[in-house]
Amino acid sequence: MATKFKSSAQLYRDCLRLIQHLAGESPKARELRRVVGAEFRRNKDETDEDKIEQLKFNAVRALSNYLLFESSVQDEQMQRKVRAWQQAQSEKLQNKSGSPPNDGA
Image: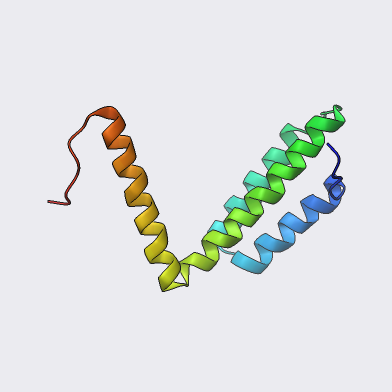
């Protein structure tokens, strides 16, 4: 990979800071810290540089997705778009499986 991300330690600290900023000391924050810590511990012995960079990229992407999700919770227009997208995805899955569409009744 051509792009180098922050060191693993810097990324881990950034994850913890972001969790603190978004969720404080709530049960949600404790669970997020547990998940982040588990992922970093699970991959602590990885030595393949490309794999490490991919893991870092995945962590950054996950944090970005989480931030987008958190902002959408507070944005009514975004909520409508997310619901419309979810409905479209549900309809696609139903069409692929041959199930009759769910009309909400």
